[in-house]
Amino acid sequence: MKTKILNLLAENARMSLSDIAQRVGVTPEEAKKEIIALEKTGVIRGYKVILNESDLGVSRVRALIEVKVTPQREGGFDQVAQRIARYPEVTDLYLISGGFDLLLMVEGDSLQDVAAFVSAKLSTIEGVISTSTGFMLKKYKESGRIMQNDEEYERLKVCP
Amino acid sequence: MTKNMKDSKFARRDFVAEHLKTLPKSGIRRFFDLVNTMDDVISLGVGEPDFVTPWTIRESGIFSLEKGHTSYTSNLGTPALRQEICKYVQKNYHVSYDPVDECLVTIGVSEALDIAMRAILNPGDEVLYTEPCFVSYPAEVKMAHGVPVPIETKFEDDFALDPEALRAKITPKSKVLLLNFPCNPTGAVMPEKSLREVARIAQENDLLVITDEIYSELLYEGEHVSIAALPGMRERTLFLHGFSKAFAMTGWRIGYACGPREILDAMMKIHQYSIMCASTMAQEAALEALRNGEKAVKRMRDSYLERRDLMVNGLNRIGLECHLPKGAFYAFPSIHSTGLSSTEFAEELLKAKRVAVVPGVAFGACGEGFVRCCYATAATDLIEALDRMGSFIATLKG
Image (cartoon, rainbow over all chains, first blue to last red; front, side):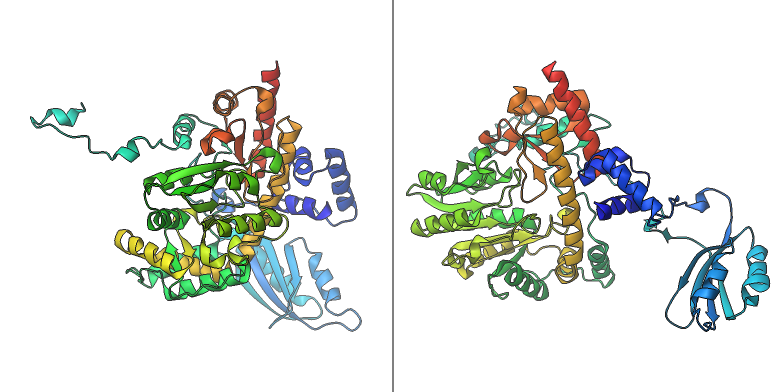
């Protein structure tokens, strides 16, 4: 039941309890209990909306930043990463394999805003060796959703 | 007299062939016209996946055009595709066919069935087939001047073919047995024991079996057994399959036939004169489907399975008795409890609640008392449709 519920919520976090219950084949009460448990244990960290900001007219600036760091004795990458994660500007942060160590997504009101964060905060953190910032120009897809609106394509309503 | 006849002083014959005048139009067609006059309809009336063809397959079709592969292919289909088809059939159905002359790529199973009938039947030959069935079967037989002989399948048998019922319908003129399991519209599959018995009857009576296994990947319990793989059956079975359902490729119109050389050869004659070859782009996309489509098929099957349970539990809950279908993506609930005919039920439900289902009678006389509900529809729509149907049934009971 847990996996089924999580799959449904991953597809649509706003799905109603009664829909979830019908699709999983349990009562709405049972579904609710399971979801609350998942929230309490922290498996579910939150529910957010997927936006196409370009339709909105507000222009927040986002950047992907590759960071090289020196792993700390006893803390590995975690110490530096957790420190970086505390900045509210950082929306996403991953440790990855390859030519650099940490991949950050940073959000700010303007280019200067993000640039200031990188030079004044990020690169001065102990253990950070270098950063490479790429400003996001256009969003095509996020969390599995494509941003471009396709023309409506109507199927036959009845066919053999 | 129609208008254009009046323009000439010469008499004009009735040009339409006799056997087509008596051929009824698909019962689905009239219903389709009715549905199209309405808005806000939730349709459980489709006979196709609600998925778009997986991207990797679509992309191969696009790439085929980019490369400029726009000419005819070999009449039989491209060698690469035929080879891949035979590999796929060997792996999944355990029957070996030679890609050189035992495999023909067609414009969907529909074309394969049409040319098979034309290649096999002499006027008056009888074709046994199960009802309720896909709407085209009896028509295809008649268009090839054969005689369709329906064998009723029953709710209490989960709509599987009862070998004894088959035996009872065999006459000296019986030539072909046409099977379609998993079945449209019932979702029925054949228990292996019955299938073996049917194979035996086919051999005893020297019948050719045409097996339309278009839904065979969409099986939710057990393992699919093709009649072609049973002992003694390969040489008297024509295996038809395609890409429409499992790979969500209905609009590409691509399928295939595998079978004994001399039958394929006869079908090939009709195919080469009337069709030339299946669309090149579709053939290249189909090749990609076989090579890299397996994961997508599984993903779609899992999704149908979830919705099957949702649909069937829902139908039983609102009082329409429905067995759990083991394959395809149709539920075929009984509507006997409502006292309505299947056509009345479908029309009144559509008018009152804007839910489209297909009257069972469209799939043969014994489909009366049932409706086909396709659950290849968004789960949220299924839930809404079940709500609406529930309240429709409540109003019937007053």
